[in-house]
Image 1 (cartoon, rainbow, N blue to C red):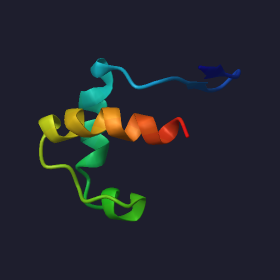
Image 2 (tube, rainbow, N blue to C red):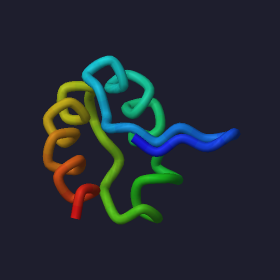
Image 3 (cartoon, rainbow, N blue to C red):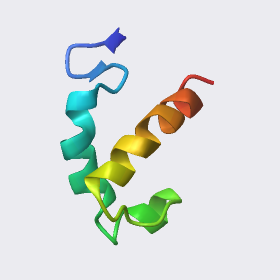
Length: 57
């Protein structure tokens, strides 16, 4: 975890799935970020562990 006065960066938790899905399903966000918009919260939950591995590199 990295914490500053204005920001806390931490690993994703299962409880983050709904908020991430709201962001990731937006067709104006996904393609710019390099992924297709998510179609379900299940898709988001399935992607979270793999995406988190990429963040640790």
